[in-house]
Length: 326
Image (spheres, rainbow, N blue to C red):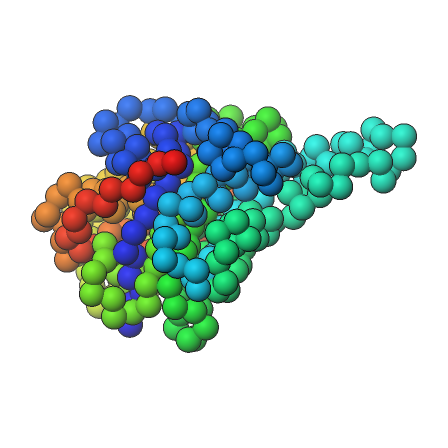
């Protein structure tokens, strides 16, 4: 039985909210960089946001768009936290007269589970709370973790997403000069059997690679996912991937050419949030094209540190969801 995605929202370089993301994907105009006009104190208020880092603020903001009536829900977030916060805190310790002369209020932002914890505290979510870090694969790993929580009877409704910051510290760590983006994307995930929804999570497969064998390993993952789904490459109607998957996709599909959606080229490299934004892109495509209802969507992620994965979603024909930005 497969969990069901029933709603989503995003804060992305296209703007705040699901409608801004839909409009941006449909326009197809690249706008990498920051979430325009996002200010934590303006969106969330002054209380509790003085020392809140950007990735946490984005996560709290996007979670708030999906929490109505979900006080018992849990949350699984894919993120590596705020590199900028960690470097700033470390620098302050080294530069101060004493190593312990630091702003203690900023210490929570240096740990990876700060964003997920703040989401639960802010929105009073009482279910399981977990942080999953896996580079560009984080969004798919978080989705798999949420699936396992539901399959084991440990959670009902879950919010499952990913977040990434745009910062000078992250730019310094970028090895290939990629144009960066930032944002947070969130899915509402219901246990198997939900009648109303946008897509069923059919299969998730993962692997570990070295630089030279990423293509064959990813190809093996995609074939395992199709086997679990009882499907063939020709059943895939739309896909959202990055360039690292080109070789594997060419061998998998041969003469079949499903629609391929751009995402990173439009919003920049959102790293930990990239795969979840790709899922939102295929859900947007399903809203626009009724012919995709019942077909499969493929999302892949390859991280240069050695992890990779793919997800197969069975798309449904949804009514467009309107979620207002704060």
